[in-house]
Amino acid sequence: MTPMTTEIEPGDALSALQTAWHGTEAAAPAPAPSEAANPEELASLETALAVDAGVSPPPAAQKIRRASFLDLRAVPQASEQDAMRVFPMMGPAFPGEWKEQIRQLRTRLNGLQAESAMQEQELQIVAISNLRAASPRHGLAANVALSMSSMRDMRVLVIDAKLATSDMHELLGQSAAAGLCEASRAKREDLPASFRRITGTQIYLMPGGDAAAHPLDPLDLRGVHAVLQSLRAQFDWILLDCPSFDSPSDAMAMTMFADGTVLVVEREMDRFDGMELALGQVQGKRLLGAVIV
Image 1 (tube, helix red, strand yellow):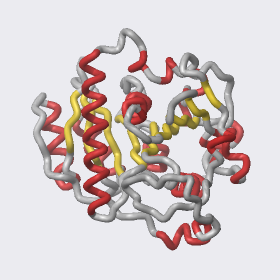
Image 2: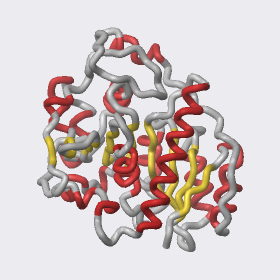
Image 3: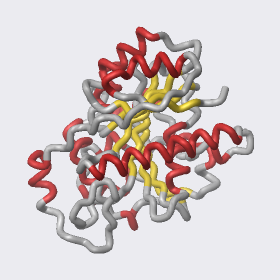
Image 4: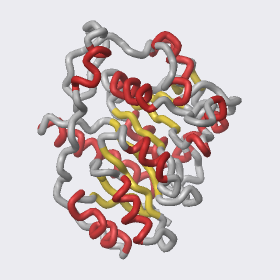
C-alpha cells in the first residue's frame, strides 16, 4: 500500500491519527514548538569548542560556529553500491508513488524546521518509531535521509537506534562494528569509527554497535545526549531510527533525545489503544506526524 503522511497537532494528536486511519488527510495547524535544550547542561562541553569557520551550522539552529566535534575526514566510507540495501528507495522495485510520498515528508519536515527557526526553537533531531517491531517501516528513516541529501549543502546523519534488532551493519555488508553503543562511551578522538559516510554523498550512518558488550545497559544515556547535542553543529538533520513502542523503555529512552517524533502506523493492524499508549510515552515531546503504511 502507498504510505500517506498526516501532520498532527500535539494537542489533538489521537484525533488526527483517527482521521488519518479512515483515509482522509487533513491539514493541521503548525505544531507548537518543543522546548529548547537547556544550554547550561552542555556549558562545559560547548565552551571547550572553539570557533571554526569551516563548519556550517544547521539553518534551524542558527548557532555560533564551533570547532568540529567529529572529525568528518576520519570517518570510514562505504561505497554507494554497498549502501544500496540501506536505502530501499534506491532499488528498482521501490514504487514511484512511494518516492513521491518520501519527498512530501521531506518537504514538510523542512517547512517545520524553518517555522521552528523563526520561533527560535530547534527541530533538527527527529525520532522515527512505530507501535510494533513486526510492522514494516520500509526503510523510512534512511529513505528520508536520502531525499534530504539531494538538496544543496544538506548533511544528514541516520542512527540505527534499534539496538535489539540493529541491522545497519549487515545491510552495509559488514560484521558487527562500532556504532551508537560505543559512541555513547567513546573519547572524542575515537568517535569516527562509529560512523560511516556514503562515498560521494553527504549521508552519514551510525550502526547500533555491539549491544551485547554491555548487556545490562547498552547505552550510556548521558553520553548519547552529549554526543547528539554536539553533533547539531555539523549536521542539518539527525534521524533516529528508534525502537518500537512495544519495547517502551527503549523507545522512551531514544525519543526523549529528539526534538520531535514521527510515528509509523500500519493500516488495519495497529490498534488505537496502542497509539494512545505510544502518544503518552512520547512524554510531551513534539509529535510531528504519522506515516500510514
